[in-house]
Image (cartoon, rainbow, N blue to C red):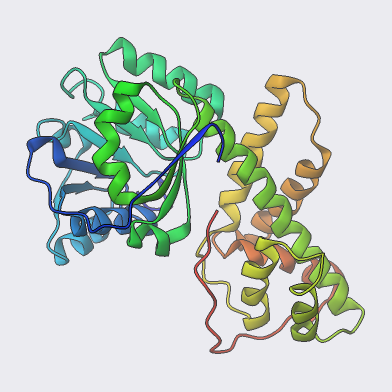
Length: 332
């Protein structure tokens, strides 16, 4: 769906041999949510020889997949008659609820022993609850958050943090093989996958906020931001997020490859989980405040590197202007 609605215990790596087209009916995969990630996953699965049926609230997203030779349906319920495996690549728990239990929802229509592969970043407690609710309807669930960005999605090279029953992994094996470079099997019940993704998002959000603040400090001290980037990326202070996001700042390009509001949502999930566990997380709280400030300043739909603009507004920093420099695909 679009933005409006929108190695732990064991790791499995795809072998290097070419994947051959599959012919059985069980290899018809439904994908709900055809944004940058979902559309890339759908194309990668089609390249692997799978029969993919897409669904999205956006007619433009459906038309884009159809223009590439794919097939789409208008509602989640329409997938139920054709797919035993449906992958959800939506934005949040509210969209998951709508897709599964709303009007024309999947949960009431899919055949028993079908699989829901849930890829959205949600609270672990919600993932556990959802797994139980689906089991009551005779459906399996893989709690399977993803990481790697749109480029890796299109290449079928995502990292999947998955938990669920052995039966669920077996049902999802063909789809997982087509979409992932590595599947981390984290447990036999929903919840563990979302827990690991939440730790990842905690670190990702903190690292982006810290990178923005560090660059703001350097710029305020009169340093050349390009020279500063070169030094830090060759020094102990570097992080993957600093190296990946700061080029967006240097080029003045805040095209939303991963938006500010994503981290408002995800860091709020971190805090929700912390409250459930009575665990204080002041570093995550500080990062959340910065992203919230950026969102409240009207930057929510800009790239998450735009969190540096909070410092621009508060301290009158002069940030690098937009130019034609490309920057790499982001991931979360």
